Amino acid sequence: MEKATFGAGCFWGVELAFSGIDGVVSTAAGYSGGATPRPTYEQVCTGQTGHAEVVEVQFDPEQVAYTDLLDAFWNLHDPTTLNRQGPDIGTQYRSAIFFHDSAQEAAARASREQMQASGKYKRDIVTEINPAGEFFRAEEYHQKYLEKRGLGSCHG
Image (cartoon, rainbow, N blue to C red):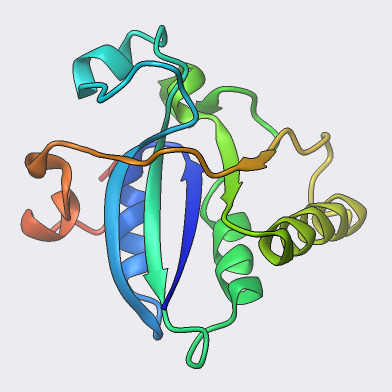
């Protein structure tokens, strides 16, 4: 098994999308990329911890390639909006890829360059690509939030 970590706005919808991909074994909503140890949702929402809402994906590379997960990531959100996805505004909603090894870093950077060159976006992609730091699992009520409520998206 391998890990991948993505921030693409509110983690509820991101988790739902990744959990439906064949080869993804598990997902967890959480926080990464900040300085506050063991942050709470309330702390992250202030924008003062430096954390992004992320989803940690455990996947079987024999069943799904990391590049396929990157493709899903780009299709989940607008990577050209700085610190914002839809109605959600703040650094915690930033577009970010947190890589776990040099192969993931290279694939993420190449993927971002390909997306920028594709012409799909009129503006520059602002997605951060950073080493994966400590992942802090979000409170249990955030895990599989939309699935538990029978919802297909965050915004109805």
